[in-house]
Length: 320
Image (cartoon, rainbow, N blue to C red):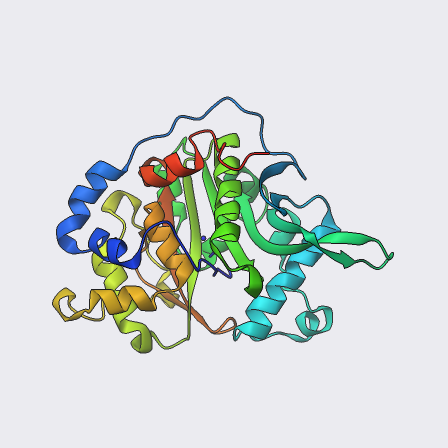
């Protein structure tokens, strides 16, 4: 699901041509009928800190083991958000060279580490390099603290209250080192997320995905494409908070070049759409990060069966 929520997928399992067909208005209804099943939750113990969730060659996906690893993930985020992208750092962020906020203290941090790329720590020991990360916050943990990060931009409490008994999870702060932005790393991250979802019996994933730039008019075609083709059905629709709401319906459907709009979408947003995600009502401009954010909503029951089957209903594809 991105800086506050979701910023990385360079490749996916579907081609852009197939994805365009998937999101043309004529295809949307049938695709919804045929693409979804409710995967059962196997009886498995919750994910443990540091437990390996999957491996591909020298790459391993697992949760951070300690705060030292969280700090390394924060440095990775700083490099992507503040040095590669256009986030504006305050004095503390510049001094520490870490992207950090209070949510980090109680979130789980999913990591991809490369055992073939060793970095020497302050004690002189060689440690595998952290090359990708996702931040995960479960509803029961959010309820014990300050709620979800996403609530600062969207009224997600409305769908939480409308779905009592369902377990929500927020995805955020995703990034991958530039040399690792490939199909293998992305698949491993999603394998880790899918393992986590099954272990913790998650029903709904949410998070904010970012599009570079703070001018909605400059990305009017992309926003309008999402509004007309991927907007959440009424029962899952969430509106941006009133004082930050930006209209996404900026062009009529017949004025949109769907292929061009899709091609211009960030890779991560396209990845979420392939998985079967919906988008919320309205965008939000985040001037600190230099982005325009959209809300991603992924009920587990709506996930594309192609992806469920690919990773395995028990997340066994890349299990070690």
